[in-house]
Amino acid sequence: MNNPFENAKEQLRAVQALAQFDENIMAQLMSPKRVIEVSLPIKMDDGHTEVFTGYRSQYNDARGPFKGGIRFHPGVTLDEVKALSAWMTWKCAVVDIPLGGGKGGVIVDPKKLSLGELERLSRAYARALTPFIGATIDVPAPDVSTDPRIMGWMLDEYEEVLGKKEPGVITGKPLSIGGSQARSYSTAQGAFYIIEKSVKRFGITMPATIAIQGFGNGGSFLAKILEEAGYTVVAIADSKATLFNQKGLDVVALEKHKEVSGSLKGFEGGEEYPSEHVLTLPVDILVPAALENAIHIENVSLIQAKLIVEVANGPVTPEAEAILTKKKVVVIPDILANAGGVTVSYFEQVQNAMNFAWEEEDILEKLKKVMDTAFEAVFEQVEKYQTTPRMGAYALAIKRVALAMKERGRA
Image (tube, rainbow, N blue to C red; front, side, top):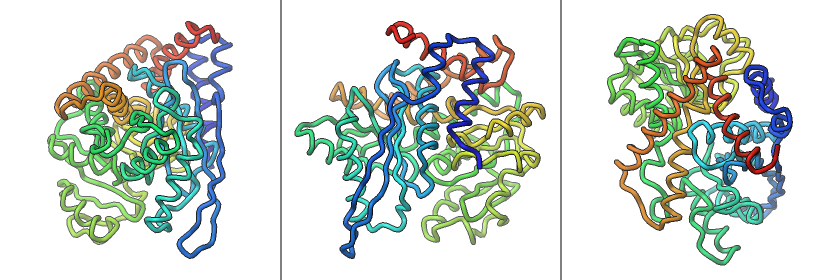
């Protein structure tokens, strides 16, 4: 099994070989600044107490407060959280927003919890982290299996402990308590802007065919945005099945089917295949939008897409990417492609600090400008070093983080 933090460090070593950054800075960037582990005893509905383990990795704050999501998932590990916090550091730097990188997680299957148990766990996690987070310290957000409702509970618990209002401590909140317009689909919207730039840069003929692995928040919104923009979404997969229709799936109908049935299985508007089949289809663009390590050494030979756009965090392993590069398959890295979410989270923080909300069209205009500018900046590095988009993005990000560290006297 691939260790995501070893992958993250391997990517750092690769960009160091390419761009030759200050050795003292690179030594610091190989590990998080701080890792917090908390024990969360929760009284369950039947009266017994269950103890859950939670983590928060605070990777680097040279450019601003730590920033990153919280995931509730049975597969959460310390190494995963550390890797994700590193990627958040580079992601914020790539899109040039004044934030560092963090990530949190609790080892739990939230599907097995009642609503009351889920709320008690969310509040316990926020309470345990209260000394270590804040609008100018570390700003959590939703991630896998967490959502605005959970962020609302965490914000309320934090403010109760603190004894004052501080809405900027958490982003991805409901609109009624300081959330931002467009935040719910911002990751997908940002990815769409990157896909549009990629299609033009690499000469992909429209209407391009798209396969999407993952039909959660990112994948479902992106599928609808792409369909409306004239792309042909031929395949979508969740953990249970791949649905395929060469003429294009009816994304809205598929979403309604999943809401009723709980999965994509049984949808009549497409052919049904095993879940992993989505990765192997001959499409123009493949979008892995599920969990990390989806494309690895054992399945990379089956990839037929011309372009891969990483909407999940770390879905292509370094070994697999080396093979894809030889095959001239372009991989647009996660730290660029899925940065729309953290960008609008930053906009949410700014609005909270001003105590003023922007209109949705204003946010989308600002987001497009950030994503388009980041894309061009990454490809300047790609051309400078004659390297892959991932290494171009890393070179850009680490230059920005290294400069901040140097000017703070941390070198």
